Length: 112
Length: 114
Image 1 (tube, each protein chain N blue to C red):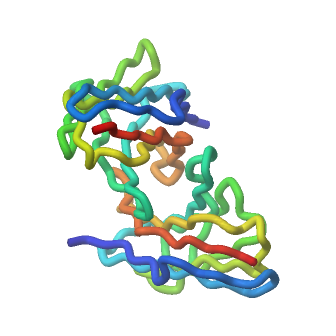
Image 2: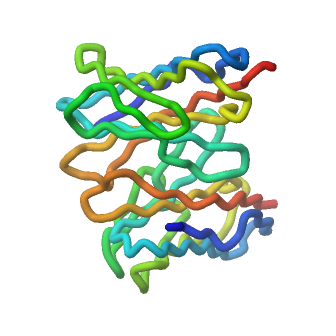
């Protein structure tokens, strides 16, 4: 069964901490994405990557960065966590040409 | 850029009743259209997608959706809802020319009454 795996289901971090969210896919997909999901706002794209070492800003990149050193792994980094970054974070991947995304189970991050 | 509107934030239906979830999109041409379902605490699962061709699309779990160009709609339907269908449903639209730019609606939460 093809998968997108997010390393943590729940995380609690303190304000100002540097936070790493990891995502790994086993489908050899070129494209990978990070979204945050908040009630009433749906999914908002933070960053995406269409190739190793490539990244593009989404709609809400402020306060975040990403890293893609290997094709299967896409990391989201919160440089200095703040309480307004408390959210559900979803990773997704897709093959070149689209055809729909495969999502991970999500990481619920709480910043206190 | 494309956008999606799901007019209903929350819908409640009785088990066994029919279901229709509304989705309207904004895009200059025919987009790629998707419906996803999210069970509590889970990621999103693809129910069905429309790229071209037959405007009535069949998906998993007994769902179907109909693309209506004249109404810019892609409504999701199910003839008889099961309790396990309770979840949040997201409509999404992507440009056929840039599949990296998928836009999601705000979601519709479905409650199923016994």
